Length: 85
Image 1 (tube, rainbow, N blue to C red):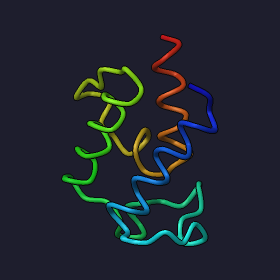
Image 2: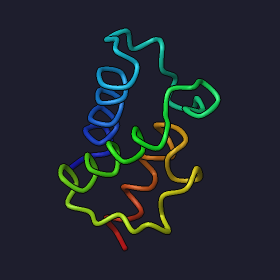
Image 3: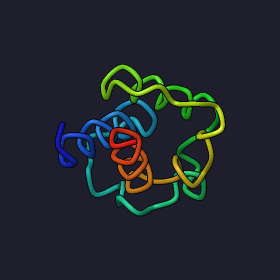
């Protein structure tokens, strides 16, 4: 899966399921989801499930930190790093 496809899947999920919109302009890729009030613990678990199901990853509990989940950019980087590890 390409970086673009990973980004689209993550952005699409956040917009549709956490922000309840299809307006792409409401979610800059580098925006902090915590600061925006978009994500909480349940949202993080949804994103972990999305990654495990769509990108064939196993996300370890120790990896569920803001450095990996606080923005679209960080999540894409995490997926790419995890797939090459």
